[in-house]
Length: 498
Image 1 (cartoon, rainbow, N blue to C red):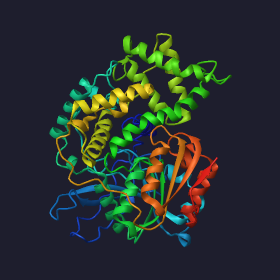
Image 2 (image 1 turned 30 degrees about the vertical axis):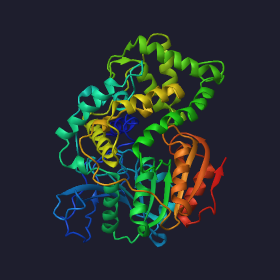
Image 3 (image 1 turned 135 degrees about the vertical axis):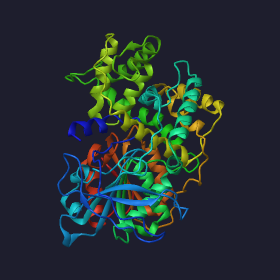
Image 4 (image 1 turned 120 degrees about the vertical axis):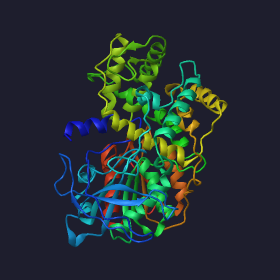
């Protein structure tokens, strides 16, 4: 697989999950062990171009159903780069990707190399593709091409606020997943990912593991630390999800309304800066009404957009582009240029989509996890009420964060209750969150901090964007997290990094 193909795969999935990987076929491990025994890993070369030559790959076999001793085994693709200074090695640092539907399989070669030298000396860097996500044993819902549009996967209401089409779309997509997803899609969940991680820990021969989880990976890390507290060493949870056990994933979707409100003023200030080649207005105050007017106009009069999915630029496509672009200040030009083109009645070249098979796989993993973790309301009235309230209070997101995803029609009840995160366990968690984060607003991090109690310390970073540590944060936040991973030294209380 070429570097260009991997880049396409990684770049286009913000609305579905986080980054994908480019490794195709890891070495197969030994046959499934007896229940309760340790799986061994047969490490070998990874396939794919552009990887660090030190990265090794293997396959771990785990039960599809951890509660069934006779359950079929499925494959979990695993990678690692060993500690760069064996004499200083403490253990393994598991890289847990966002999503659901993201993978850390190429992260030892990728973002893992951004870690300071003393952290890379301290740990083997370990990545994995979660259950259901290729090249692990994969799932696919066989969705219609149109339903793979990001503005369709995000449940944007109709221009008048109606959720009728969203409910119909939810039924169609859920039926496709039930028809084509096989038995595995029923066993995708955060709790099962945590169980898979503990199988991986044992296979690596480690008594405890450290972890760096980002976005959805923070919830995975928190669930693992709740289910296996004495198997944890040093945990950094970066861009922290709200662990509300009553809503779980619904709370994450709802968080976008506040996340956009927190972040859009930063975009508006950037879009009004003198000398900015993508400047939209003379003052920041002009940008918000400009966006709202343009979205309303595109609701009424969409522009044809050949090659895009959907093949038109309508108000919801503009809103989805806004949401995607606020993930990082580096993406602001994408939104500004689309707004300028639309104001002139034109469109830029259609964004290049990843291969459809990749979209199908990522979407199925996301759907299975989101819908199996917690029961979603099935009543149209619940979503109608939520959308109306959200549209009135948060016009930028037009009701989407409280709308009906395909989980509203999911045919399978959850197999277990969501994990409740508590303060029972060792005090070894560092939370890192930006003040302005469109996807995981600071409010969610504060709820995770409250749930973990004495187990955690929160680092609030005065920065904008998703994933503060070594990405969209600042030097103070980066130093604090790196020092904790390398030495175990953690602030004695919550801190703010200006």
